[in-house]
Image 1 (cartoon, rainbow, N blue to C red):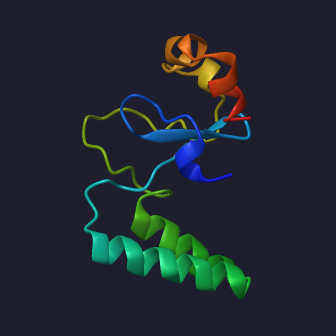
Image 2: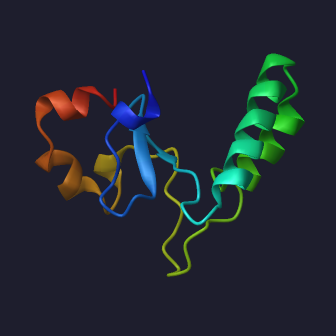
Length: 101
């Protein structure tokens, strides 16, 4: 399933996959940089190079230092119901929540 089909938090910081929050790519990345890092990530995964994959994910803003500046903590890996996104999560339809499981 595509990342675009998964529920995204209202602030755009996370998507829900396998029942947990996963950090989205930094929306401030320019298209050229984003494409370059996505290609690097794909190459790293194909060659099973975990270090290169981690580096690409850091450049995309999906791991490592957060890309937002308001001081909100990173809640990646937690179920939405265990975070400040709990009300948003329960407001989704059952079909929408299923897309994130």
